[in-house]
Length: 136
Image (cartoon, rainbow, N blue to C red; front, side, top):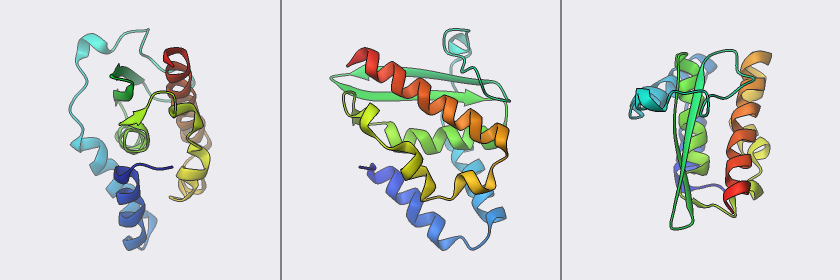
């Protein structure tokens, strides 16, 4: 149950032959995001369990889940962009049903991220699911 934005990333990954190109692609996705308002970089939006600084700011409008985010690490900003593609625009009650590990495995991310980055990615997914479950 992936969004079209996430399917587009999966398709782009299929055309990239090596992991250096895929890493650059993920980093570029992060650079394309609008900057998170510095006023939203507060303890309430900070994600614990990440090696770098990560902030996620969710919003729910008309039953639809969206979030913005930021990190002080370029690759993590890119991972936030990938998660935004996976979750933004999904009905809030469907967010906890998204099988993020299965969807992300289509990108082979866990095999190419450090253990700390993988743990941080899992922490971000858990935060997203938790916020959506509370709102639903």
